[in-house]
Image: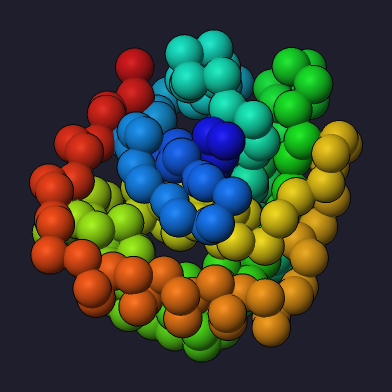
Length: 199
């Protein structure tokens, strides 16, 4: 199946699609970012990002969508815009009848690294190892979207509707260990896909 990961952001929205097999192996299908200019009106920025998300859904036709769950932080304006973009992704997926799952940052970190408090560099390193690539796409938003898609592939998803992540740490740990072993055994490394800049 193809899973689209969405790391919501108004200036840069990370988008990444991975192929996932029944044995939980994953590989990159596409990765990039949708962008908008800070100087534009909010409505115009949201339309720009929404159009790019829609284009990715139409082009890749994923089987499921994973979106990072937004938490309140000290910067209220950042949280508000991030939540708005997350909503755009959920609406676009729902209109296509695609299941949407929200994963918390700690769930994603635990799935990819085995540690729910891992730093960004540790997550990026493990994403590269799991996917068998030499370099992880930049900016970090693209890497985070890949991590979301991997997390979703390993934790499973509901058949329909919008749901929270499973929170199954044991299953995620098993999947992480197996992927790490598989990556360590494989001498094959391919170049990471070049991020696609949003329109």
